[in-house]
Length: 141
Image (cartoon, helix red, strand yellow):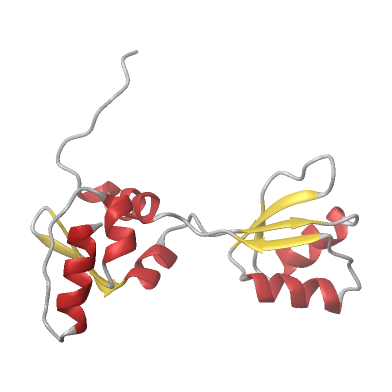
């Protein structure tokens, strides 16, 4: 925590603080802007929120008593729907929380739960750098 506060204090003074780290959870709390390099190529030069948003880990979790109707409406709007659970639980990808809400409202579909999920920095990093790794650990057969 001490080093995190020191770096934020220096950045708050207008200084640039460059940190190279493999501690993704720590960087998620510390960094404002990311430079990600893989195999000598710049993969990302953007803010933390934008980097995480690029990861496909983002989805909207929905619970509705009308899952078939919502799935149909979401698909028609360009979203994709994961498996529908026993209680009308579903995962929607490709649309924001607001878009899903608007689609449900426009189609008269009642929602019992609606929440945007967010990938962690580690999940986004692993996904976005998957094609840039030199060595991979394989599970034994």
